[in-house]
Length: 439
Ligand code: ADP
Ligand code: ASP
Ligand code: MG
Image (tube, rainbow, N blue to C red; front, side, top):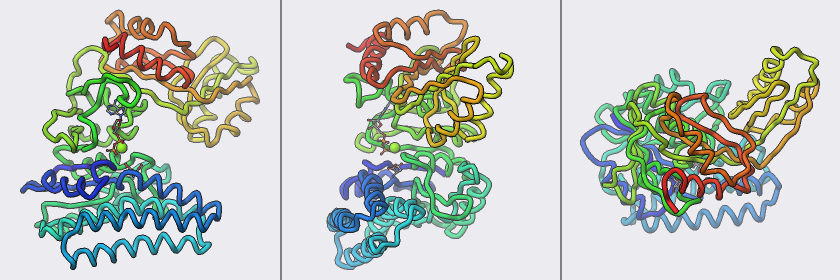
């Protein structure tokens, strides 16, 4: 069985939804995972902010704007009177649910349930379209099988068991449709896999059913060597190893959710990145290959906080790092980059939820300086440690950019530098020239 995930732009209009039909048909069994239509999750987030601030009139207007958009989608997507009526009923159910929150009942607990409406709507509409075309399919509710544990990590054994139970109910079906992004947490409440999480859903589902392949369909022909939103010239990379792709995703290549490679990698399931608008383009195959040596791509991760921790020498040198790391561990805050000297350590985090508590504890034995608005630039490839020149090439390309931190040697897949975000564009352009020869 294969898993095919279609992102927001791939389901972004009625025409796009219609054009998916030919990509999902065929005799082989597949699970199709859909994101919300592009713009919907942002609109729902904005709605939650209005509800949170008790701006009920503005919330009402926001719901009607979104509802009108979906009414138009149904009109364009559906042809027959019978199915138009069913489409209108479907929208009424979802939007009446949203409207109920304008009656002063909103608490932040309901935010996740509101955000879930995007994927619930896109899958319901696609399923309705397939039914109108008399294409046999089954709509599987992701909330019946996608589950997080108490650390907010996917509970793979639970997901595997419950997804198999769902599939077993429809043994003769070839086409299953389900929602990306949404799940339940360890308490059974509606939750999600964070922004861009539908990629993660697809990979988790792939691992749960031992899929032969996970396909991520998006609006570009695969992973490119640099961020096409920032630099002018880029090219698609046709083959990446799991490790290379995981580094690129984690360090900011927006085409993939940061942790979505891992479930597929653990089960050795190839991940294909494909372009819905250009289905015949090669795209990128991410698999268990012996990667060819060299730098493949660069990516940038914004909103990084750098923390410089200088020991007051109350601790012995060998106890200092342990004391530092224990604090981050206790506050469940992962560290991305780290550099050390004899009496100080600089590290970066992207989750600043517990920053104040962390600083307070660090200050018991160290002087702490914080810098926000930092960006990690990650240079990824297969960079064997015995080969000279990679670090030189990177640093020479970045000769005009002030570097706050440099990390090399943690793995043979990446060289990372930390810079002030104000220099991000210049750094990506400089690397595009220095490494890939693009002017
Ligand atoms: P989807 O809605 O299908 O999940 P996303 O917007 O999340 O799509 O990801 C696709 C976008 O990622 C592309 O349109 C592109 O602008 C952006 N992107 C950023 N970095 C890269 C990269 N290195 N390679 C390809 N796309 C990238
Ligand atoms: N709809 C969610 C988002 O916009 C999940 C996804 O698109 O992958 O973040
Ligand atoms: Mg995405």
